[in-house]
Image 1 (cartoon, rainbow over the protein chains, first blue to last red):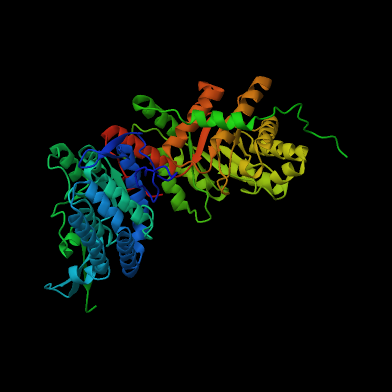
Image 2 (cartoon, rainbow over the protein chains, first blue to last red):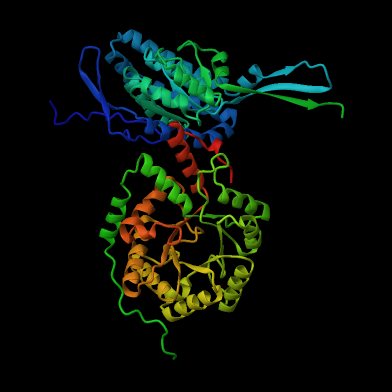
Amino acid sequence: MGGHLPVDKTFKLFIGGAFPRSESGYTFQVRSDDGRLLANAAKASRKDLREAVRAARSAQAGWAGRTAYNRGQVLYRVAEMLDARSDEFTALLGDGGRSDESARSEVEQAVDRWVWYAGWADKFQQVLGTVNPVAGPFFNFTFPEPTGVVVQAVPDDPPLLGLASRLAPAIVTGNTSVVLAGEAAALVAMSLAEVLATSDVPGGVVNILTGDVSALLPWALGHLDVNAVDLAGSPDDLPDAALADAAENVKRLVHGDPTAASPSVIAGFLEFKTVWHPIGH
Amino acid sequence: MNAPTYTPIRTTSVDQVALEARAAELGSRSIKTSSKRAALHLAIRCIDLTTLEGADTPGKVASLCRKAVRPDATDPAIPHVAAVCVYPEMVAYAAAAVAGSGVAVASVAGAFPSGLSDLDVRTDDIRSAVADGADEIDIVLNRSAFLSGDLSKVHDEVAASKEACGDAHLKVILETGELGGYEPVRRASMLAMAAGADFIKTSTGKIPRAATPAMALCMAEAIREHAHQTGRAVGFKAAGGIRTAKQAWHYLVLMGETLGPEWLTPDLFRLGASSLLNDILLQLAKLDSGRYSGPDYVTID
């Protein structure tokens, strides 16, 4: 044995580009598949959610204002950083009970998913926008815009591929995101936060909270400054009252396959604006 | 050489470490439910809703005044603010817009924000703002003279400004960020109060080093000392960088604990701010609905 003491990582939250502990001070234990204590992770409170939404809101206009080319570069950079740390993520997935082969395959697919969505940054407007035939002297076209601040309940399984498959299509168009990761996905999500923090993703564009997703989701659904909530990885027993709250500010509720890769996933996080422009005058 | 007109008898020294620790401790207090609602209403009643920009127009001042009179158009239970604070050129428009509402008109005057022009020019500026309908005048302390050690000159200028105010209340801005520490702020506070200030105020909001709770505590302790010496209650106005409801009730706690509940009225306490009001309205909305609100649901100033 050498003289080196193990230095265990403290898993905190990711808000506005920083790594704070939960305002509440609560943590929860994360154990491996075979019962080893892996870490004490931060258990986010509704006030952490409030701060994360505030950070996401203040970052949104700047992120949406970047060129599509630049957003694509940033997402590609995430893929690069993730790939460089593939051993770490393989080991984390292995702790969750996955075989080495299956874990390595998921990391590779997740890297590919970030690259794939990076490519969509300067293409989704051409593919999803339309020029519409109308019976009058108007040039009529519909174009997509980011919806704003998105809160995303990400899947517990597969954690890394699920996160890539929901987060990348949400932010590539200029949305900012608050990710709610459940206890099973907490360590993978917070390790991805370290990847994001070193990938030129501006502070606040992605915020990651770990803990009890069912407790946080009603606050997100009721929050008037949240424009969309992604339920792809949510527990399916959401209270009706929370869904009614979501209707209050006409929130976009997004459902879908947690690991799909498709431009229609991107479209789920967009608003479509139609313009009637007179011609012949 | 003329005899000095202002000679401080003594200046109480300031314990920087204790002051900052006390101010931080008073800021850690948690205020909930009905106390929170009362604190938020009180904070609104103490706001000097301010616009001091070169781009101010009569229209912009008029909309600010409407907001001052009725902060939330959907909720008449929310009280009006204490005053609107504008440049002298805008006083007449503001006075017309708030007439009869109970909202006062405050005007910065006297070569704001530097205070470095001829005294006659500054007192004329004050008289003209008062003639236009200003109820309160915010002047800046002559930091140049203060830092040169010419305390009599500073004193006489404040006294002359007070005289020029007539019936209007005089607030003296110390611009604490430019005085160089707690001791000079304490001395400047005592000087301004001795010269007749009705209020002492932290900052202009025009420099990056704005009001801090520790500076406010330093000034509040000077006010307490002045009240003990003379029996006269001088008001306190915090300004510059106060944007959140949490900061606002930090100042309320600090005033209540240092000077007592009698200072927690718009007559003796003010918060100079512009975006603060929206944050308080969002907090009140959260108290009412139980849900978090957002900037889409308040006016854009």
